[in-house]
Image (cartoon, rainbow, N blue to C red; front, top):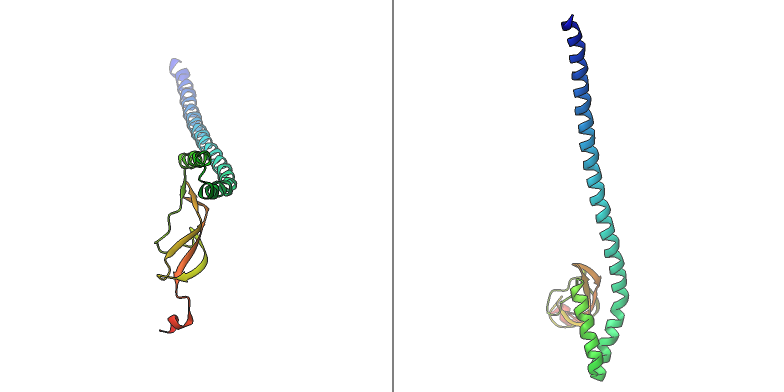
Length: 156
């Protein structure tokens, strides 16, 4: 008689063990899904912050241009100090000036305003500075690019 009651109990134990294993797997999957969700939400938050910073910096650059012109024309030490502090701030948040003079013209980082006499397809002069924000072009540089400027030179 003890043998017969033992068999149904073993079956019940086996069934409960299987159910526990299934529930453990479901819990592990739910925890992994939650961790992935947390990472995705954190990444989206970071993207929103980066986008907001990008938009703010775009609006700030014309003011930086104005300050640079003021420093060039007035030689005012106070304005120079403010401009230096703004450049330091921009650098610390990941803004860098696009360096392109003497380099091959890159249409992804610069806009050609004029083609002038000089080495073909080389950036010769910057009209308006360009900037990157975390390796992404914030504002392309406006430049003069070297090239053949007369019909006679093209046919030679």
